[in-house]
Amino acid sequence: RKNELIRILPPGPKALKIIKKDNEYIMQSFARWYPLVVKKAEGYIIEDVDGNKYIDFNSGLAVVNTGHRHPKVIQAIKNQLELFLHYSITDFAYDQPVKLAEKLCKITPGSFRKKVFYGNSGAEAIEAAIKTSRYYFDGKRPYILAFSGSFHGRTMGALSLTSSKSVQRKRFFPLLPSVIHTPYPYCYRCPFRQTYPDCNLWCIDFIEEWIFEKYVPPDEVAAFVFEPIAGEGGYIVPPPNFFAKLKQLTDRYGILLVDDEIQAGMGRTGRWFAIEHWNVTPDIIAIAKGIASGLPLGVIVGREDVMRIEKGGHASTFGGNPVSCAAAIATIEVIKEEKLLENAKKQGDYIMKRLSELKDHFDVIGDIRGKGLMIGIELVKNQKTKEPFVKLQKEVILSAFKRGLLLVGAGKSVIRMMPPLIITRDAIDVALEIFEETLTCSVNKVC
Image (cartoon, rainbow, N blue to C red; front, side, top):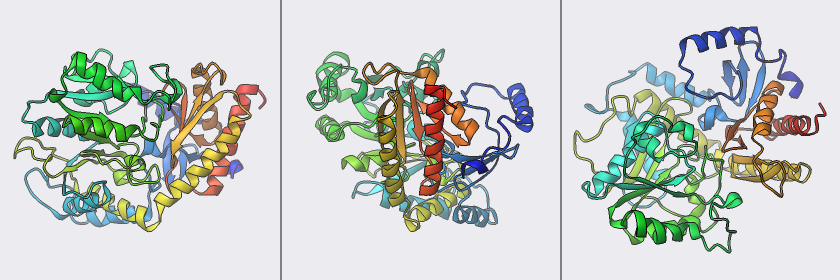
C-alpha cells in the first residue's frame, strides 16, 4: 500500500552520510538517477537505510528477474558455499557450469548442437562474441556491424559497438577500428524520416545498398551484433518482420547473427529470449544480468561449429564461478516452476493497457512500447511535434522515487518499467497510482 512506503522524505540522514562517503572514496564515473541507499531487498520491495520502502520497477537494472533474494536461489547459493567458492574453470573442471550449460542449451533458440562460454558480465559476453565470431572466419573477416543507438557494454571491444550516448565513448578513442554502425529501426523517430510499413524496411536495404556498397564488402563482415529490443537506447521495439529480413540478409552473405539478450533475456519479455517474438534463430546469444538473480555471470551460447576457439585462445579466471552457476541453475528452475514467463506477459499486457489509458489524458506521453515486463514510456513536449521532454523525464523519475517507486530512464526522454517477473497485480496498481500522481504533479503542477 502506498502509505506504507515513504516515512522519511529521501534522502534521509543515514543515506546522506553514506552518499557523502561514496562521493569521497568512489570514482563517480556513473550517472545515478536519485540518491537511493539500499539496506535490504526482498521480492519487489527495497528498503533504504532510513527505513523507507520502495516498489522496485527496475529490478536492479533488469538483473533480479526472480525477485530479490528468492528463497530457492538463496538456498542454492548457501549449498554451494558449503562446498567451494572458486576453482577456475579455465584450468580445471567442476559440475555446476556443466549443469548450467546443459540447461542453457535447452532453453535458447535453435535445435542445433550448441556450446557455452562463461565470463562475468554482459560486457565480457560481448567481448567473447566478438572474438568467437572473428575466430570462426580464421581472422579473414575483421568487420563487425552494429546498430547506432544500441548499448553493448563499456569495455573497449564492447564499447566499440555501443553508441547509445556519446558520453560513453568520449575520450576513449581509438576503439576497435573495424566496427560499422547502421541506424536502428526506431519507427517512432525513423532516422530515414519514413513511416512503417510503407518504408518496406528501408533500414535493412540501406545496409546492402549503402554499407556494403560504399564502406565494407560483406565478405569481410564476421558478425552483426544487435539488441532484439534496444535497451539503453530507449526500449525500442522493432517492427514485426524486421528480424526475419535481417536474418535473410546475414544468411545471404554468411554473416553471423549475434543476439545481445543481456537486458531482454531470461524471461524479461515473456519469452526466455526476446528474439523468440520474431521467430528468428541467432548464431550466438549473449546473456548476463538476469541469469543469476544478482550474482555476476556472463555467458555466450552458440552453434557448436561456431564455438571453436582453440585451447588457450580465450578464457576468464572467474567465468563459470560455481556460486554464480548454482544461482543461475536455481534461477532457471524458479522461472519454470513459478511460470514467470506467463506472469511477465500477463502483467506486462496489463501495464501496457493502463499506460495506454494514461496516454489519452497526458499529451506528454508520446509513445508506449515494449514486450512483457520490458516497457518504455517516451515523454514528449506534445504528441504532435514529438520533441523529447528531457527535463520532465528526470523530474518524474526523481518525484516517483520520493513517493516510493523506483524507475530509471533510457534514451533521451524514456522512462523504463522493468519490475521483477514475480510482480503482482496489487503491486502494479500501487506503482501505477504513484506514477500517475507523479505525472499529474509534474505536468499540471497539482500535488
